Length: 269
Length: 269
DNA sequence: CGCACAAATCTTGTATCCATTATCCTTTGA
DNA sequence: TCAAAGGATAATGGATACAAGATTTGTGCG
Image (tube, rainbow over all chains, first blue to last red; front, side):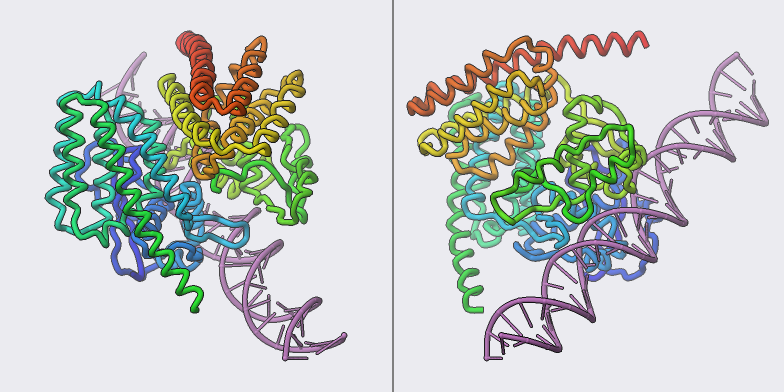
């Protein structure tokens, strides 16, 4: 991927998810003129700032695994790739640092954060803690509208199942979970959860990409919805706990092997 | 990790405080610089970057209430106050935005975050959720060393009780809670907790400053330690829940009044 | 008198330039 | 031959300059 032109797209204020269109391009122009690509959004569109656009793209590249753990990131290299000066890249990295995806050291630049296995476990334990609490609060307050929205996302997930786009699947997965808890009406908690998910996402993607089938997860997702619909709070929470814990177990198993391989490599190197 | 490094350390070569003090009157106390000497432990001194120094100071000013909720922050004004260019200030604001203390909007600059009463409630519910979990994990693993450290902090809190420095008290409070959970050995969770505490801190300070006596809180703190020492896990957790919930209740009561007053003012204005 | 449009001003955003710092490599001395 | 010191190089950090967006003010027309 050589160059990237960012196009301004509308996005709801708090929604971190956004889309950047990457194209091959090498002109270093002030690309601020292609903002006319308003993508079918009639809401109050807030244009995304350049640093945010870059941050989103780098974030995606990290989650993809394109920028591997422990890799040191050179501001200038990125700046040239995106055809902008180092300044927006710096701000983007600062943001990602705050999100915990990269680590900024004083005059040494940024490295992609690498979590220990213990920390990965922690992430999932936190998810269980927070998500179950949210779910419990949500179930009592769920309306048909909430259920309907969950249904819709679920169907999207099932149909885009074959797409094998782990990135898309990951964000859909969060969106679904988030929809399950929407009735709890806890924006701030959901934000915290989002940040935490961001950390686990990249490992989940590794998991997904080697997973033969996603049926169990999909089935569990539907079960969660049905239990919620039936108002079986405790069963639903237990199921949710099990669902996340299962992912944690599988993932950690995978990561142990992966890390072991990496250690071998680095030793033999 | 990301959120862990807040206090401390100056810049050996260029003394930032000196430059700042040259800008006479506006008593911008960089308290961090003074802690320079306490490093003692290792030579692994972490030099603080200028943006971090500024971020720490602005953070303190927000928590102090010096920069009130909803206030819009002008980059240039701050830059001039600190005697630096807008660049480090921008990065500092970016950081604070990520921490949730200010909100950055596209071409509109930064405003100090204002939480709704519901959100303040959420913050405390999150604290209960996470802290109780940590405490439960910690109690089983507590060693005499852990208990000793808790004791020390507790004593510091009791002696500095009369100081009436709510800022100091707030960070000591977090430090104590953190020490209680240290045995759980969950760095990442603790970081998340730190961020969340940062949000509640400024409201807690308001609470403290109007509170006649801190005896109940201090007593509860000691009780927590004793219960943990005795290994009474469930009682300890219940006590912790009650401790935080109590703060929440008192605080919300206070905030309801405060917000009501503010609304009156803004209406009559 | 009021509303609307335009210009001026203020504030933020981006680029470029210079200073500072870390790393690497070479050189010198033991 | 190895290690330490010093210099060269490349990357980051910060400042100034300039461009773009937002708000406010002023003027003209209905």
